[in-house]
Image (cartoon, helix red, strand yellow):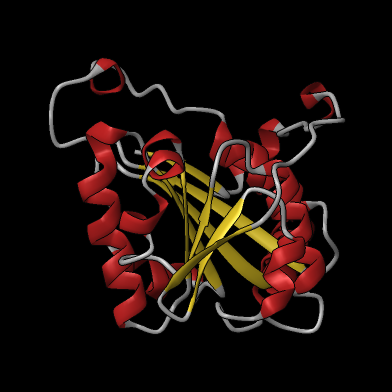
Length: 203
């Protein structure tokens, strides 16, 4: 038991030293298919899996279901994330925007994604610094490449190389090219032990 406990503690210290990214799937304010059961969509888990494959990164996912997300409490338990990704549908977008505003008030950059913001990126950019339109895998990989030496400003012209990305260039909406999907998703494996370690929270 001592050995297992020591290994677990070492793992926790290693995770603490990594750059932290948080993905949140907010709950809808109104009744919809996802409010009947705790049934998370796969997008946030796929993106977290991509992040966790990168050396020096640790991604976590919080799915609002039985419990609402509390940003200060989460930071106190897990640490301050370097960036937060929020995935929304129309039924949950107002809650998503409220969470984005909380993060930005603390100086935490926000990336918004999901069907709603795909069609209304300009609306979403009043709450987050970056918007991913459509599929997010290509954009996430490109952002991680761009952030190798640390995050860059939301207005950085290098965002033009990030597929499916929208951002504000001054007062103007700027958009990257569409991502060409070329990798089978079944390769993005989420291991059961990640749940046991609390890396993904479904509440």
